[in-house]
Image (cartoon, rainbow, N blue to C red; front, side, top):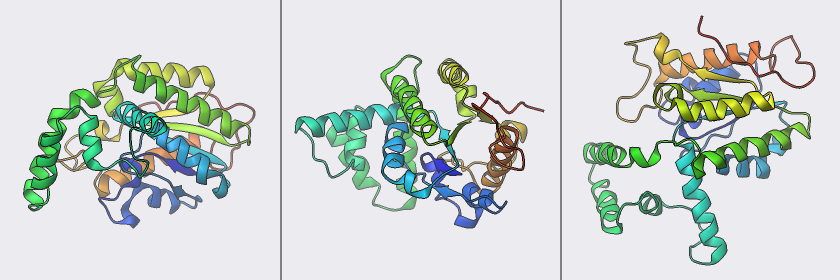
Length: 258
């Protein structure tokens, strides 16, 4: 199984052995973690096109998070600017990311300077930046970023299908909790295409448990363990792993809350 996603998949805030991709591999699966912090689906598909085929996957799991549409718009805008010769092609810096969110350049510079003063100021600035940019990062049904997300999933599905590779999608529960309209748009596409999907809802099932870090919402070691268990169960039920082999086109599968 090859895993595509952003920082939630990369899981750098915990030791590697505690990350959910590593825990998934501990069940006996061959797992490659291609998660990169800050990536949206547009970058994830580009990454897979360049390196994924070398890993000869039998199945690919994409983890979707609510900031993917905004990340897609930012990356797509930067790529267009590079093609037009109005931006450098050496990557998206944090400064450019801040500016792309609509903040003025002096404000971005101040965030960057304060972030160097120490851990606590950096955490406070990060929290403030999240509060200021969250409305901009929130996915909106029918927006350009959502259209890019659907396009990316379709492109990946066609690319994998031509190679006999199965695609599955796991959605962080924030979609259902905060953005049901955008989630419905994604789910409608997945069900039309017959792509297995699930909502990762272990946080809702374990209220009060320390499953996420308070400042950024990424999963703790305990949260990663819960994610690995839920993903493994989903992949098994979808017929993507285990002794049972899926026949023909994959059926749209959603893990039910039992």
